[in-house]
Image 1 (cartoon, rainbow, N blue to C red):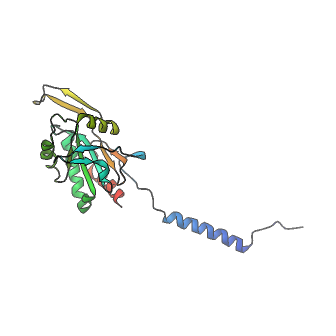
Image 2: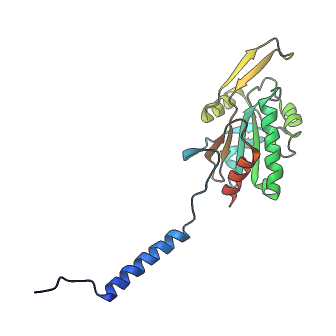
Image 3: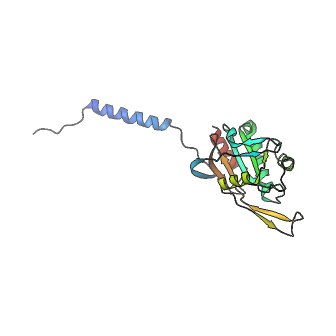
Length: 203
């Protein structure tokens, strides 16, 4: 009786070699970063914009390519969420050490009526000397709010000596070096989680 064909030793050796090479390639391929923030899937290009910084100079988002960008929308008269977030950013900045130079910390006002460039500079630099405060014409700001899904509402209240407060989105947004929106963070996210994710992007 004729025996069925069986792979000879050389054929089995070739199969083993192919399998070994495949496993080696898989092992050498860098693993995807493990993030702690809320991932934007898939990451999407952030809409470009031009606003005015605290020194009266134009700030164009696309000019920040090559840097990680942290964005937050708030206002300088905010009694709670905004100063708490900027305090977290200060901790992030300190924890990053020299790597902080590769990050832009950007605070965009939701209260342009009161937040002049001078007022923004006085406020944000209390938390970080290189933090940026941005304002601009209402139509330019509205376009940025819309691009990031930011909610804002003026609320008249007798509890504030200023006459009104601003309800607003309290998330922090993280853009990578290519200008893509990759992550966001809920209010109260620990600084170490943000530092972890920034370091993942800077690798």
